[in-house]
Image 1 (cartoon, rainbow, N blue to C red):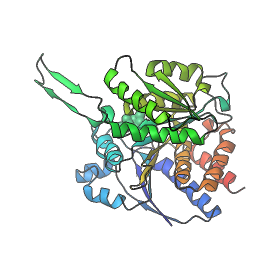
Image 2: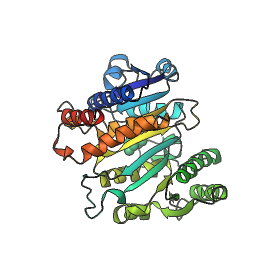
Image 3: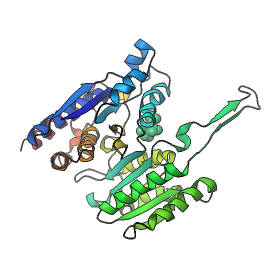
Image 4: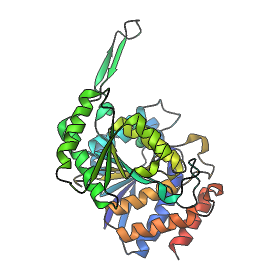
Length: 345
Ligand code: IPM
Ligand code: MN
């Protein structure tokens, strides 16, 4: 019996979550998986009512769950940063979800802006370090408002953080057919930080002789992701670079509606969290327009993480069925119905 915490969140979050939960229910019935889903109504509304984004009490409750499914966080009703930092980043850090795993895969029938590329040409996964780097907010400001104002935020990594992230990436690469791992950095400018990453990379590589390793600067990596994405299998990088390159990756796989992610604590000592990469999309909220496939892929990732591989495969097949049906012209509900029909086959 799995305990799953559900945070629909803001904007289109609850619309896509509904589809995700429908798929979860259907696939769990089919594969005799038992679970209990408990809603947590966090987000703009809750913050405006209580003045609290995510209380320590709620955080403690969340720790007793196996996994967390998250829709989207962020709202034009609240100043930027408050909900993102107060909920999303707080969860990632407090639950030590040190890996952000983001697959980039072009599903059959989906139009990529890289028109001549076909489905199997894009099938890689980005391992984004998720609890360190520029996101720790180490830095400060002084003399605010004067021409001498200074502001700084540092890219900070320690050995242990780098080691556990790279080790996860090597282990993941080893399970994949092509067994290729590319470290993405900027060792020509950020010499201290990437000297550390490259040294640890070299160290761990000795224990994975079957994994083929490469290194690219982040700017060159962006170029390759557009020009020849087929060269990538597993990419591993820092928190900030990972944030940026996965938006690029998302676009090349057919847009944000096709991009899922897992915020993982691979040690399983705290719950991991699965969320679509798209945000709350206030511009299309409530219009039955949101593409729920990223949410459904996040449900699939969650089941894989729980080792429910048969159930995950059922979902993947349903997505493949729907992706070939010009789903970009379909409403949220229509996509949901098509997924359900495919799951019940
Ligand atoms: C993401 C988002 C978040 C991030 C924001 C909302 C804090 O862009 O999940 O990629 O930067 O990590
Ligand atoms: Mn992002």
